Length: 107
Image 1 (tube, one colour):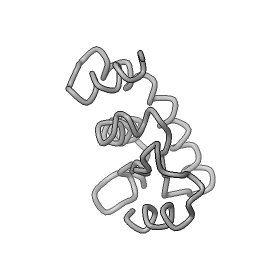
Image 2 (image 1 turned 90 degrees about the vertical axis):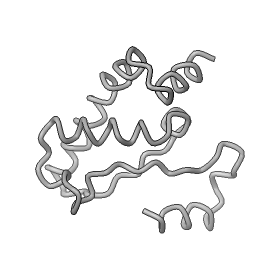
Image 3 (image 1 turned 180 degrees about the vertical axis):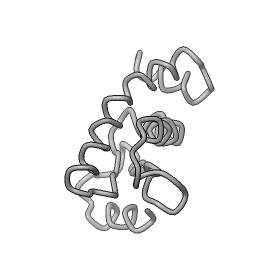
Image 4 (image 1 turned 30 degrees about the horizontal axis):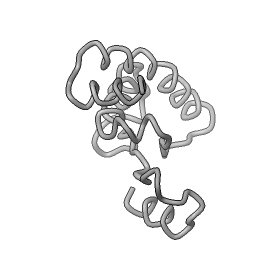
């Protein structure tokens, strides 16, 4: 129940909950920038229950954190710096290859 409440608070603009997420995303953003620097991975698909529950604010906050860390090459409108959330609803079967392919095509 607590993760749902935190996700709802972030979606509704709660500053405390947003700051908690931002602090946690620092680690994910750091790992993404390290992968980009090490081997040049430019596309990252973030999927999972909490990311999906938070939705677009999760992607925006992650993108902001990547930019804050100064990952040159993953930021700016012409790059792949904008994180995307693979929007599979929990009731959809994750092994449905056609559904996953359709979501990936939209990125």
